[in-house]
Length: 188
Image (cartoon, rainbow, N blue to C red; front, side, top):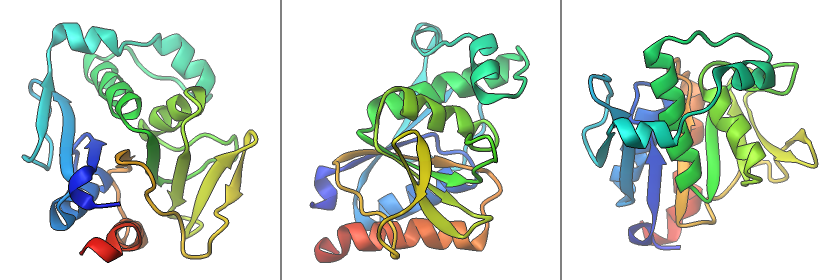
């Protein structure tokens, strides 16, 4: 796959999303970062500011998300808008890559967890690099499985989503860099 045929969908936030964006830029992959007015992000390339109507299209019941995620989400306007932008990120990508931590209940820690759960609901290929376990995991057959390849996944769809934690660790950064290197090696 050629990098110039690909689009990374993300949110441009500090941490994993900015690292995905930096790799996309380095490899010549187009970048779309969904955000909303007044939200501070770390990327200025490919910014797509969602208006009020577009945010409503990505709205979800916080009660539903709280039950699904086994945690409480407040009805604060900012968290609602972040979840709405995650809807756009996941909805736009054909496969989803997340950097974070898989919890014992099978969800992913933090707001990023909604992106992973939404990917599951949409039956999209989902890969999570668990920083605590220092490895890639694939959602398959209703459970997390260590990735089949010891090297980790390869991007196989031209429209992919990269999201994750704001507290990116060195192994998470390395996982993103290696994902791009494996996926676009021949084209670089």
